[in-house]
Length: 401
Picture 1: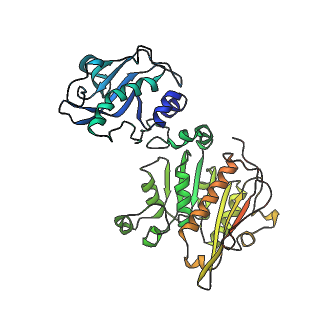
Picture 2: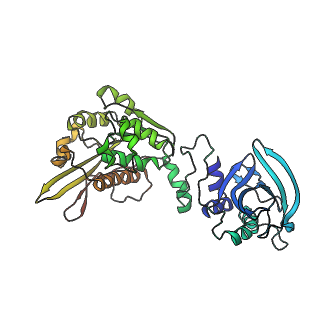
Picture 3: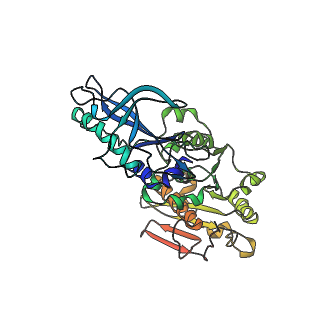
């Protein structure tokens, strides 16, 4: 697994964190987009390639001080070939589709290389220093994407934000989860955006409406005029939109019905972000009856003196602390008493939708054990006037991971 090879080997991880474009392919470590000078004194970009030994998820030390290069023979700023690193030149295919043109040999001040970061950056600096004399902005540390080649990886390209923050192992806790999002309006679309950046295995989207012009103004990112004109179903729209970044998105292009409950029961967690109270009246108790943990969000906005006031609600229900179970004598009307007023007339504010979604995703991650949660509240309400965030409810018991 490419991602694990990188995260478990500090020298390879440093290359990624430094912004190099890294690939591990068929037993070779490849650094792409290495700037060098051609014989015409032009800055071009090539690849440095070196063999690596992999034992499980551990990469051994460099075998020697040599490296392969793909590109023209590199020169100095006046077009003279760099003889100090020359070993041989011969175009060969090291692995399927992995071609190289030259073989270099250079030791850093007569010593052996400490690790692959030491080795690859040394060669990149040799070639790059001449390129920067022609173009000061030429750099191998482009910070561009590193492709995720593991078929089991949920992302199309490698997720490097976690490794840079040192939380890769923590985010692995979500790797097998299957998540459902019922409703892809203002809040649901932001939930989708936030969850899509996690390592969950699958994201199931449920919505029967079309993505229209007004939706574009309370959704993450920027929709094109063509996308709005298509009037595609919301679930299908977001599935396609986010497929450029990740896999495992499943669109269910219809409003949730009682006979769809089996599609939710097989999921590990569900976000309910709909404003249809009649649907919530049967859906939420049914999820609890089938012991499906979920978060229900709501937002009530009202006008007063030409200003808006309102409350945002986030409610967590788990098999150990059901909110809507009959034996608890609680109903949607009790917990969702603030989900009234202007919300039903589609007065939604994008930053409040995003905040509602953020609070829901944070609560989910708390319950899953990614965030410290000493209080373990099962419900919170945020009030615009006064900027108050208030917790309530008994302590939620996190699942055993």
